[in-house]
Length: 297
Length: 257
Image 1 (cartoon, rainbow over the protein chains, first blue to last red):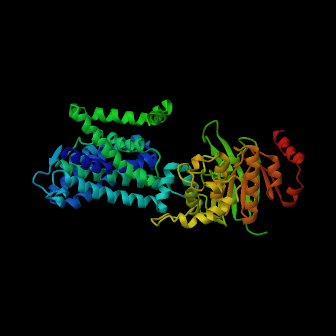
Image 2: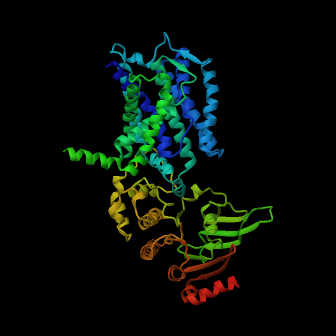
């Protein structure tokens, strides 16, 4: 039971990372590699700040701001420096590794004996504190993003990803939209990193490896499971996808796989999910499945 | 005569500068556009029609010369800023609309053309009545598809939407870049008719590139012919009314000759 609760808690926290990536990957329509640097950057910032006496809340907000700065760097490299977005992200990610080491002063830093946001929910059964924390943060974040996307600015942001040529012809500064999207997205991913570090009790400079795959898995699993959805529903589907992904990982580990193989397994799960639409089209999987069901009826 | 609202003064655009391939794709062009002008723009491929639109729209920087709006120099004004007074419909139906957003959402975006977009709610519902009304002026059932993503529309519907988006907030200058060329003959004729109605009703100032000599003759009060980056003919009002297809063909023969 506690394993399931733990998986839900992790799913909720990682949902924030998924929604952060959704802003760039699905709305702006490009892959942002910066996330592999901003996730540990958020973790490093929050842990180092708490370590140096900041309150957990202030440390977490600081992590969000630092993540936004990293996103801003990628955004400027891409829009003003005209560096292809994939490379701009890789540059920031690579630079972030050194910065994360500087933030922590070492390769990993423990929160042992320090307070964290999880202390707000003391006295609950095991892992319920991370579920509550994750739920509160994900509800706030999702509500804010849903509101934002319904504003005039949010609509201009969506239009930029949908057809930047059209957006420009309507006077929308697509550069500003892309910089804003990258900043907010990486802020959220750093926020996710800050929360995960507090749940784990430490930050490690290598904890960013494979983050983009995990975040993408949340997005894609949500899409494969639910199919056509409105924008608001898609945002919620990311979090559900994130929880489902945790269950899949849980099952895989229960089957006896080694935890060291997790990145390999994550990549395979993501690859299968991403190939699903192509296979579905080719073999008409959904139709065959529903035909199978109706026959039994 | 009144002052022009928009003017190109001795505009030159040179490409491949400093190389043996150096060429003026816009060659000392002077053009005065007056309020209410509906100018049809003709020219062979490579004559400079799209270059002219790109200069007016700000997509292409001029090498020398001046661009004036109400007598004020806007030569270095960005594309985004020019959208405050200018809108454009492209030839490709995919260029002018956001495919994953609905027809209504696209129209709402274009209502704020050239304005700063803030964190106020977008107020889609409050605008639906207006959107239903203006889409009814279009020939191909666009009013029935307000909540459809534009990616699911036909090319004709998309172009009709692009045209509405360009005119929903009155532009001082409307650029139509062969906006009916990618459509089948009937849809093209219907959209052209609706376009003309709207331009006349709202007394819009418009430049329209076309390859149809008939359209160039039937619509508008003024016709210009471009050739090798120069305006070789500029026919207005009564002279344009008197212009025949045969006479127009002689323009092209003169150019080719």
